[in-house]
Length: 398
Image (cartoon, rainbow, N blue to C red):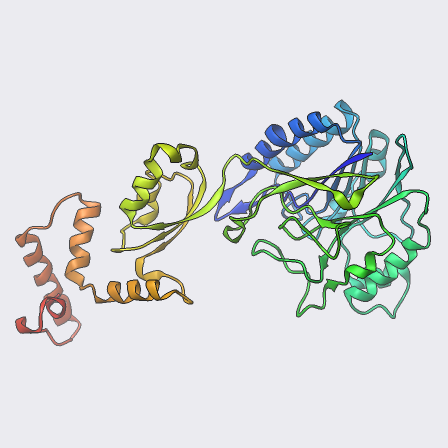
């Protein structure tokens, strides 16, 4: 049988104040469904964090409802999904038992006895076990075991119970939402642990033919070819700009050799560096036509720019953040350090002249400079500070 593994949709995500619902709708409508129609999987696995927050926005709920209807009712393809740490388990789980009759198998909360979803193909049966996000306190309560302390204890206790019932003549697949030791993290993830206490040893998943993981946003193997994070289908932070987002296709006859298919997003996410004019020229270059709508984080070099977001949006309408000249962050390179020192050496008069050029589109005149010098002198006098003499240079005078 062929299964499609995806995770961490975070429907309703807001990035730098910008809703990504349009990008998420594009992923589902223009990428995922065409892929499903081409591949014709026997089932879809969705490993948690369907929504970005416990009380999801209406647009996100409608989008997911439409996806489930088109997949399960229109195409008759079963969907097996679990709740992640971002999902409101009780809200998400409403009607879960009714959904099963339509081919939507949703597990929102940990249960003491986890019955598998059984898919029967031409070969051996596929048994899919769903393990939604849970913490040690939930495991203690559900299993009635007060000896459970950390995440490792909790997963060991739950997985030992599952392993006891695995059928050796079936392909056993597990859905889980957790942090596996050794996996790579991203800035857009909410940590489930402090100092490693929430990490799960990949050895605990022994006995399963494939482990379909969610939570980490980079698509990656975790302790073996049969343990995989599908990763998020879209980039949700700028440190993910070099990630190749994808969904995973696995054949149950050889689940360790799963393949990934790269996602084509509506907009990419990237960082650009340069002066305002350099960025303008790069954006308007014919070869960059398709990238003007990308989500942009700009690092502006050279002279500080007044109202940089407004200026950048003239040619990058979806710029989300900017570092402007001397505000470059710590931990900089030698080149950035030299830039910072250069900016600090700029006097107030030079900044005033840059303001006239950028905001008023005019070159400063001698009269402008004289008025600025007089106002500066008055402000210093009002503040009770010493007024520099003319021979201290332009910087001190300004």
